[in-house]
Length: 211
Image 1 (tube, rainbow, N blue to C red):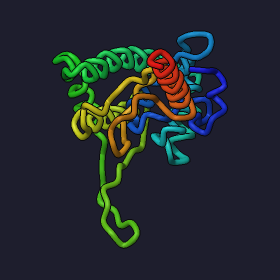
Image 2: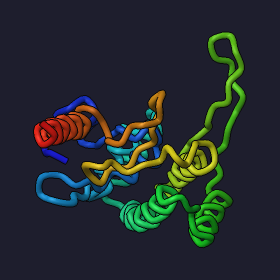
Image 3: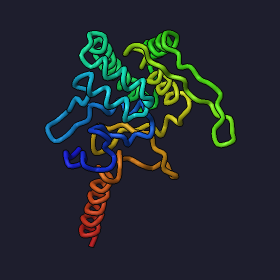
């Protein structure tokens, strides 16, 4: 993925958001940029920025607590555990992309975290209608497992697995929401144009060879 892509509208505060699924955007926090695989969650402050950009820390109270954990041992331990989980998530997503299901061990881990960090919900009035709304008030860094596990459950149980894909031009994973379900690149700005140009050039070569 070209470094220039960082300037596109698909980057928010230094993080890429093109996956259409929060947990895949989390998986993409280690993309391949100009200098190779790049760890975007280098410290807890970076994680704080990602959680805010991803909409997992929307309240002023949650943001204040994240700031207070920047240099804490608790925050550092959570980040280390989270990065380890990200690689197990990558394996699970790759299994789905290969037409399989996540391993039993991965499902056991998800269910254990769901039991320990359940996401609370409430029924609210919104625009004259009743809506399901998450109630999230983190008291410690590890409480952020709740929205992440909820996002993982949504990906693996509420989406068409055949639309979970890896970009053919880079390492980014995404959920295809296109009408035809034929998208093969992370985004038009980042890799789609490159793929279209390559396909056009290939057609021209084939036409020249036939003439």
